[in-house]
Length: 106
Image (cartoon, rainbow, N blue to C red; front, side, top):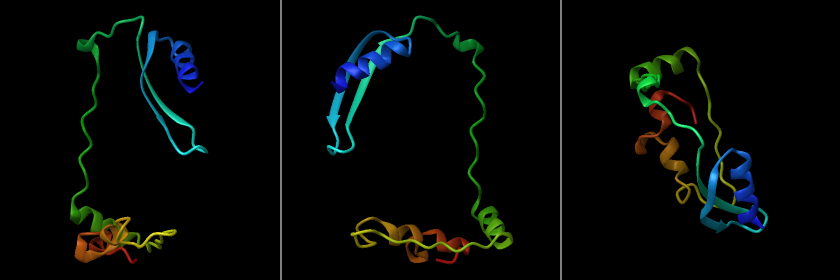
């Protein structure tokens, strides 16, 4: 039923010639991931698109300054896994290039 439901959703979104291109059963309590494709009944004039400039990431100095002005402490944990297998240590630890390098207390 997931396939047919996805097709119906695509039709309600205004797609034409809707087809399922991929289906993956997730955990039974999570349902099914369904990818669909279809045609839209209109065209887009790409010459009239207004595309915003890409946001520039903050520099390390800007991040440190913000953390100095607004100190924060991070509490992190895992449920049933060790911190190395989920990458938590790498995210936090200054030795691994983690957020501690910006002055965040972990």
